[in-house]
Amino acid sequence: SSGINAEYGLEDCKSYKFSSLCTSLSPKCDFSSLFLNIDGNASNFDYFSTQLQLQAMDFSIIALAETNTNKEESALYHIENYSHFYGDKYPDKLKGTGVCLYVHDSFNATINEQLCTVTKNLESIFVTVNKDNQKINVGVLYRPPSGD
Image 1 (tube, rainbow, N blue to C red):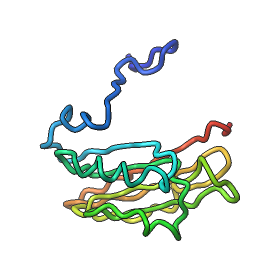
Image 2: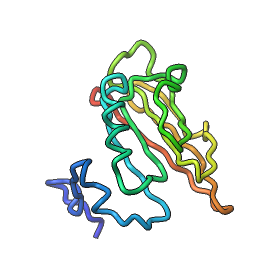
Image 3: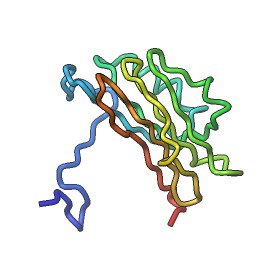
């Protein structure tokens, strides 16, 4: 069974309020990730960052979509103990664009340009994470609602 119900979507998908997410997860995970459509760093990053600090665990990877932030502005959005990787925004689009990854400092990561793209239909950014000589490609893909 694929776990996908054609009529309703993912059968096993669970929804959590951000404030209770980490209490639902084991703080002993070796690798964890969080994805959020932030709907604009300028208006929502401070709240997100504050909520993140209140959590009982550090995520290995944090992926954000709709940052509306380009690489040049990325230094404004720092998360302590994380390196950040921002993709390019779609040209001349002010809202509903931009993806990024934050990688915890306990990991070494490098951008994987071969897997990164920005088109009107898809935005992606990928990094290769290396820890203890183990490599894994981690990324975020975002398809804007107006995309095909």
